[in-house]
Length: 247
Picture 1 (spheres, rainbow, N blue to C red):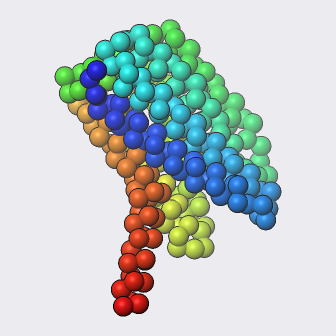
Picture 2 (picture 1 turned 135 degrees about the horizontal axis):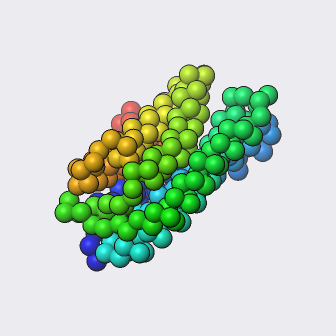
Picture 3 (picture 1 turned 180 degrees about the vertical axis):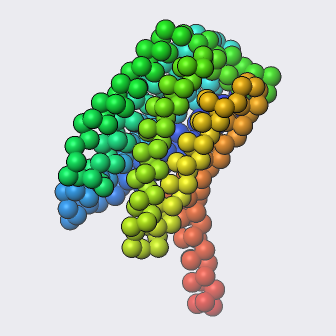
């Protein structure tokens, strides 16, 4: 079985997203004394990252298990798009719930749903048959119009993430929250740029697949580093510092 860069990239990002979702889940479970609003925000963010993680895991799992099977890769793409639609709806609702609770999110959610359903129907009608490129990645082989629909759905979902965490970064009162919000906003911004380059701009399949996989893996590493590795390293450094000062 060939290990593709696409499988590594999507699975890395899925791991990072699930770590982030688990972090918000812990916040939600420990929020007994918090207001109902804060508890609901933590739950919504948990669901948002869980959906994103599952969507990327399906893509990465298909690329890892069936790299040479175009039909299986197609089904991985089609199934993942269902969770992408869900993520877009959650992102829109969460954005309104946090920053514009007095406004109804119904119209933008309907708009996101229409774009997502059009993308899903387009995936079925287009029925792309992905394949491995000479660079060792998966070319999903979508038509340009389908790529644009996928980009619009991703723009709504990832853009919603950027809007949420950029505004949290601007409004945060503590350095720790500001740093975390900035990292998550930066990852979302890079995600939007990455899918725009991959789905809208670049035409050379080998170049766009290689660049997309590299940036996708980088975003996954940002999540893992910010939410798992760095806190553990910082805790370890503090313990070492205490031991040295005690000596």
